Length: 428
Image (tube, rainbow, N blue to C red; front, side):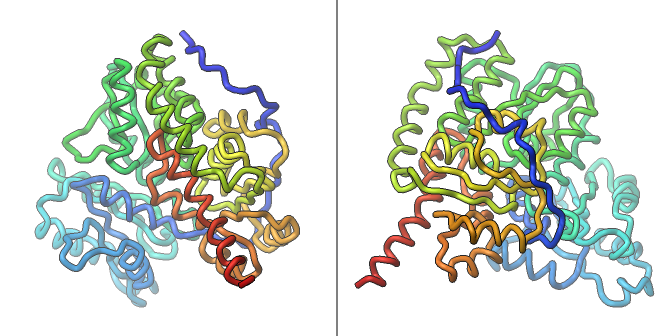
């Protein structure tokens, strides 16, 4: 059964040639994902194996209160460790033993490499296997890389979730799995809409607690909540699960298309779908229309940063009336963002990877009304008179599904309003 949810026809960008460049790139560290994952997974602990620089990054970026008991920490590598002059495995075992003895509430321990294994002189996958044998069944020990050398900042979450999939138990039950970390209130909205349509049981990866463990198998279907989960997508398919392709739930149109794809998979009737979605769809349409008044007719240029770029470009061009000049992404997974590319009208340059100097040249030549980029590029571009939006804010702010659609548009309109006010003040 396919819901009758026709979307406006466009020629689409799925077959558009992609400009692929490899050179110097400006990306944030993959360790950053720990900042939202440690809040999401209530009985997990993330032990970063890295330098003092990594410890300072996490502490400053997370803004942890001094009275809080955080669920992450750093095992700091000294010069003698990096030089291979000490047995780092023994030292790591000692740090973990002290941690788990002090924190019996930990049920999942992630060993997170801040650098490639050849740099930190540790094979964390073998260490995780050894520790699992020692501490099972009370604690499950997994590992992933958050290296800024190897990953962009959202790939930290992808690597974490991908590490969890192989140890999920097998099941033959037909279940829906929602994959990706969202703020709790947004996750509840998504699950609530699906449950009102009669869809269930619904599982979410990552689960809040290890005790909420669920299985995966050939009868599992999964829908991605984030477009940067390429490795997790591949791991789930290796376990036999089947992906439900859909545009991502940004804005009214994207949310409706995402819900419709899931509803169609579970045989939801058109009448039920409309009854459940009519009111929130109307609220989302009105909120986007109001928040995007200053965006219509404006141009936008995306630097590659979070892998949210293609779905966001679809939202801004189709729902907010903007024109995309270039849409850059660190990686373009057509199996994941293909439905969004189908809806993105031809016109923008699609670029994958980055040679930052060449891309800066294209941006300066185009003089877009709004540039979406990282902080390292935003300040210089602002000094040159270009309005910018920090890409990292789009990951930390609730922006998915109907109730956040107006907030999402507002994130892009505010920099333009600020630029307009600055011009008025300068004129006075």
